[in-house]
Length: 114
Image 1: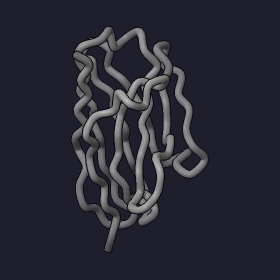
Image 2 (image 1 turned 90 degrees about the vertical axis):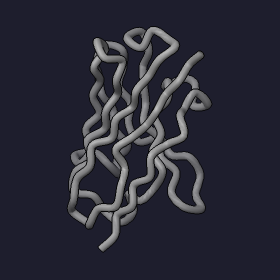
Image 3 (image 1 turned 135 degrees about the vertical axis):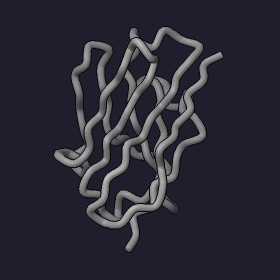
Image 4 (image 1 turned 180 degrees about the vertical axis):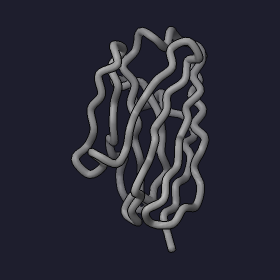
């Protein structure tokens, strides 16, 4: 059974940082391109970043230069470092396989507020 479990969210002030983690199981993690998605209150699912199985990284313009995606294939883990957070980054963040957004977990909530 494919499982993805996100963690690391919380309440942070504008300009602050968080590190999100995604623990995966049930599939050969190292073979897959992986992605982070987010859903802001009242809005649809938005692509944030992805990392190829070879380690190439890509970012939405809205987060470029502030967020960093990484992976640890030995631990079957995906990460997203969030720096210089803005109020518009408030959302539930999900990890998933790049080509199967329905594989995402329950998400972790990030709230950016003063």
